Length: 574
Image: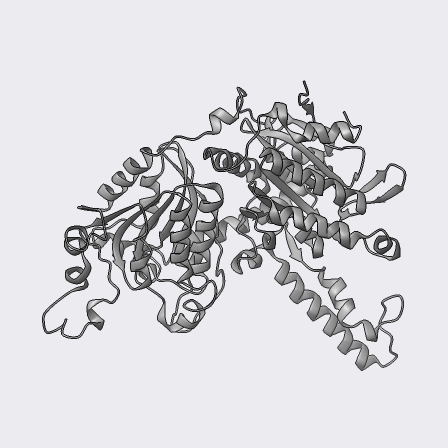
């Protein structure tokens, strides 16, 4: 009977780096983490204490107060999409829209992981801004892909009308939220909605398809508020009169229950979620127990060099992400620029694909730079991806990639074809897959390693991430190629022209470097969340639990009959 053998990976930090290197790396990471924390704090504060006080004066809780009461006591909330719209200004508003005016997060309710979607009622009364719909839809996708219950905390004044053209229409405009409501319902994913206040126009449609709709006494759901209804003013009607709980709980039946206040609504949501099946994670541990890595995840702040051109041992990274720092490498003798294997995270099986850095010795070929994709590595990760999908093993893609091998030999060997094979595998897999951009995420290599265009359930970046087609300096050279000689030096004897070209190249490089910043990527929704490297283990624990919570909706084999065993035997690896 085939069985899986896990082997120790990694070393103590003192055996990996000298004291000066450790201090320098950690100091650089601390500065990046501090800048990230500052931005996340601004987002969490919404429009600040003044607006939070206005919410409380109405007898309501702020959005984060609701979330803190919703999740299990002492548990942690894991927001994603936090930096959407960061630094972006909008016509008609003196203020920006932190987090696009909505909180999306993973949290535990009654021991079950749920997706929380909550309007931030301190930001323009929970209005939808440009990218608010896309952010809500992204959270609904996570619920659909993982079959996690979705909880809506609705307090929405509708579209921010001065910018309606950028959020109303289009393939992913606000109306697409309601389509995801329907898709979740069709898939049998539980949806529970509580309406706490304004719920106007599109906001009124969002809760209706949910399995449970709860309204507080201060809540209303209307297609059009009193201000738009002819005669409302003369009849002294309010939006509460038109679509409050008296109407929708007792007359239209568009809602199920009315409760006095926010706290009662939150308590009822918890009761409803606790009626759902418990997590299947304990069953899928197959008798194993969750265990921390032997080496602390906090070491990761020192392991990554501050200069992205410097290499590191990806085995040391894995050793700080997986249980007991035990890892089973699959097909280690081929495509050595890539690491593929399985390990437990929080006691649950996860597959890993990672880029090996530095100079790699490929059997039968010789030495070549890591951090790129060659024919053997592409074939290896494609086969591994398909095997994990067949066996039901969630996959984590740890990216630090500069792209594909290029040149005459690469084309002769058919890298385009092998790359297409990998793209097909990742495009058709049904198993949960997650992308983690450790540092470089460049060119088509970013696509091949299951980047966001290939629909990972979530894509995490770190403060070190550089997401782009190519580096700023390289792109500047490509832009001004006709002005350069064969050594990429400026080919002119005119000093004025030289200055113009130098400035132009510097401007291009600087603009690209700014675009590559992970905060900028997150603001554009090119990545889901920016996470300190020391927090990656904790995030993987959550993603593992979420991947294995739901039962009966995808193929999951017990480890004795994994096709991975057959793959290794046929390739002569075991």
